[in-house]
Length: 70
Image 1 (cartoon, one colour):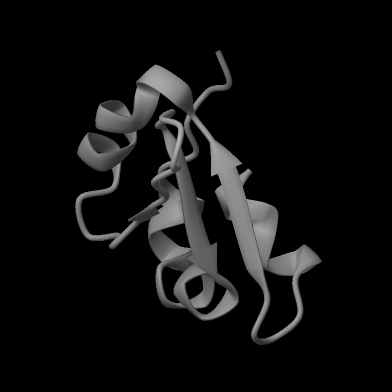
Image 2 (cartoon, helix red, strand yellow):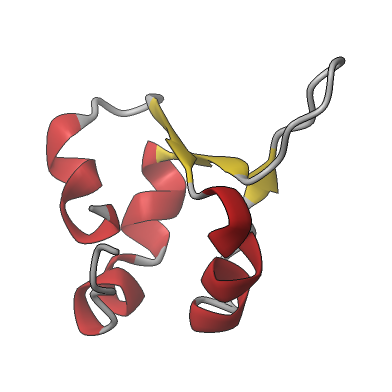
């Protein structure tokens, strides 16, 4: 999904993705990416935001490390 996300956004756009309990796995798989983890007033976690610009910045990483969907 991250490898293709930039193709569906405009400059200045964002993508919000829920990975749930896989948050630690995402950070481990992509240590160079500064994920913005969202916090909610009533709890919940495992949801991050990336900008179009971040997707471009890390495009080579996302292309090289396509993770299987589980």
